[in-house]
Amino acid sequence: MDATVTVKEAQSVGPQTVAITMQSPPAFTAKPGQFLRVTATIDDEEYARFYTISSPDVEETIEITVGIDPSDAGPFSQYLADIESGSKLSIAGPFGQHYYEDSDRAVVLAGGPGIGPAVGIGDAAGAAGNEVAIVYVSETATPAHRPRLNALADAGNNVTIFTTASDSQSGIVPPEFDDAVADIITGASTEQTFVYGFEGFIEAATDALESASINPDEAKIENFG
Ligand SMILES: Cc1cc2nc3c(=O)[nH]c(=O)nc-3n(C[C@H](O)[C@H](O)[C@H](O)COP(=O)(O)OP(=O)(O)OC[C@H]3O[C@@H](n4cnc5c(N)ncnc54)[C@H](O)[C@@H]3O)c2cc1C
Image (cartoon, rainbow, N blue to C red):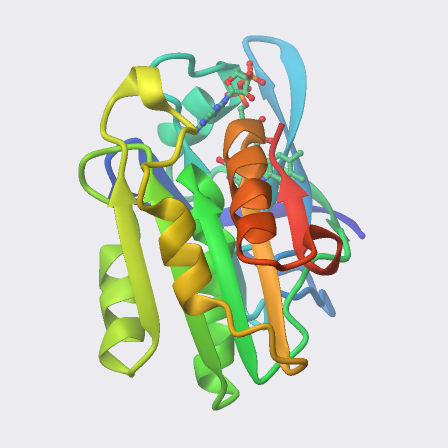
């Protein structure tokens, strides 16, 4: 589906991270973890980038979570960082097969803005009465989406947060990451593992899955680039 939508709210949800809530087009359906192509004209030039849905559903509104790389922010994330409610965006989608399908237990490994689909899946799992476990490597000293992560932890879900906190370490995981992944993955048939983030994080998460004797081919992995 292609549509032009109105931004209802743009809210900082952590350092260098903004959650953008858009009006859902009529009859639009999508699952958390699927992504949209978002198009806008910036300084007379048209740009398109992909953003993953971070709301648990898209019935009234769609939320995406945008990370602004402190060391290497490009034109589109900078544009979205300053977008205001009432602005128009063109969207297409949803795309992707790496979305939540109501598994009894979801394990989400999230790097940087990969926290968007992590909280989207977490909230969808909570609404369905299912369990989620999240290992989140934040690129900033203060993690993003803290209230939603706290609520998931308060509901009894396992939430582990690491902060790399240094621009030069962007995408690199701390030494404790592999053990944290091994601790939360059970390998049960009712469990689905998801990985969301940029290339460096995807590589580290794939290594951690292999170290935990989990076949990465069975995980749903979305590489942000
Ligand atoms: C399937 C898919 C889903 C995506 N979902 C999201 C999402 O939910 N949220 C989101 O913020 N981005 C997501 N992205 C990335 C997004 O599409 C853009 O690439 C990103 O916002 C940078 O666009 P730009 O124009 O600002 O920078 P560009 O000029 O396009 O890129 C600048 C450089 O910075 C890198 N980069 C940008 N941000 C980061 C970061 N935080 N950490 C490490 N490297 C970074 C890019 O890979 C690139 O090398 C997704 C990409 C894909 C392919």
